[in-house]
Length: 516
Figure 1: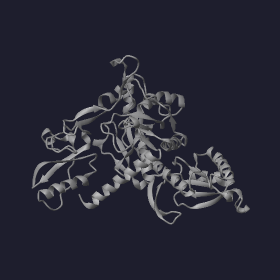
Figure 2: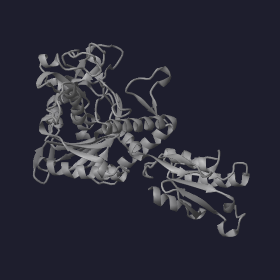
Figure 3: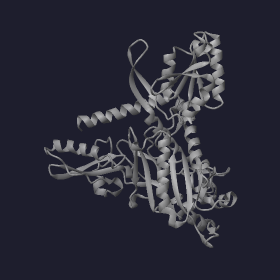
Figure 4: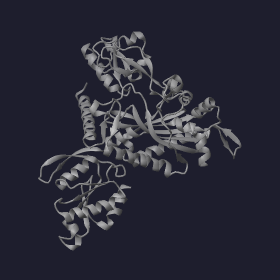
């Protein structure tokens, strides 16, 4: 592996470690059940994380539902009748291929281990495997260059033909090394592993009472389609939106909160005429890209993957994955999929209940087709934190250089909008005025009052949690240094660290204009 490649990988790992450490230290994210050793793939959001998550969900709901005339909301139950999951195909097919390493006892998804023949001395004597994604081609090439050097081969190698382990023959699998194993051939034959959490409804644990924690929020929308259609007086094209928890028994949770066993989705099922599906797919893609820009994720950090037909769900006529450049690689934030009429058709067949829409203009019945923008709440929260995280060298009040850690959240996403500080905590008149300002603002935004330590330190604490504005009440506020500054405060902006004198009577309007 080249020195530059190794340095780049190390830098990304260090960056991710810093982000994870900040999330714990400042109360964004904690390991679930931490005092008992934790539970892999499950996370708890602390005070700041809960606020950030709520801001994201509230803004999504505002932009996707309340600002539109063609989308309504619902909140479906986590537990559904077992027949829902049988009709949707989840009970039989919602699974991942699982392999075990007999040496290390580690488990992997077989479709996330990729292999390629390792060329040694001109002959194929074995295989090199990489994990996670075929986009890691450069890493695999570096591995093979090491093998070439051992075999005395010099020069460039041809582009790799990477294949998932699920395509390997038994003979090939015997030569493919498991990650971190010392010998090849330790991987078991892939077997299907259902990702749904099974549970029982009622006191008797038998087959009649089996159901599952929902693996996606979409099915509740499909089975309530007719009820929403009739009670909301909507007609295609229209959407039903939902934010809610989903559960998947992931084989290998990883990358902090990115892939978890319990997670939240923000999802819309947009019902339309069949001939409009592909057009609406592209329109929804653009709508969702604009949303990410509005919450502070620039378009140049997003990647659009037009998913090839062979990699799409069998019912999809088109799918876009919106991906983000995380420190651990480019990964999916959201899928925008054209699901055709598959879901409503299946539920109509299994339930025996009509799910068509009668168009009074054309006098025809049809089962609506569906375009689905489905985003991960937890993944987007993580993207917001990764995008916001920054470190810079600044000079402190004593003239010494120090590192300033700052989360540059878009103000509308920031967990705390404004910090309020009295200059000194032992001056009752300053404290009283600061509390007045706090009370005035807290009705309209989340405000944090802090009187501990030097003002510079208080600024740094707010920088590290992403607070866009800090308001300091000083002796000028009280008019002790001249009437021209009485009833004014110092407003300090997070990113540029500039300070501006604002009249208290204008303060609320000043802040609301900048955080909305």
